[in-house]
Image (cartoon, rainbow, N blue to C red; front, side, top):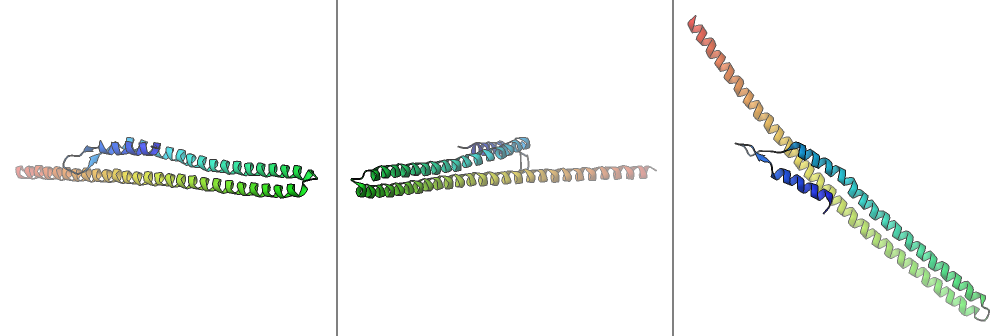
Length: 186
């Protein structure tokens, strides 16, 4: 389980722990906690990107090692071929064996490089897919939470606005009643 997954679970816990607002379907959440968790998600995303880069670097190392090993095999085959050629009695046989060794070495080197490239491509593809899924999931959950927080703030402000309007209406009515009462006394 990645750090991002843990943080997303923490975010869900904060939403699950939200306090219900009486007489509405709304809930109050700890905005600071949510902001902190979102910031932690942002900070962890580069770490997961670094992990994907490490996999790519590992792929490059595997390829370099395979190329080096293939070059070593070819050098060794060429050295063996030169030794065989140096022997006068079996020069023709040595040349044929050297050609076979070089051919086999080249074939083995190509196979090793191909296998290493395939393995590295698979690792990179899996890592890229996983990283993209984690980033997409985090972004979607962050957007959802931000929308929920904005909706809550909008609803709270509308409720306050309605309360103020009613209070002002009551004050105007009371003042009008007082004014009417004073007018009747006069």
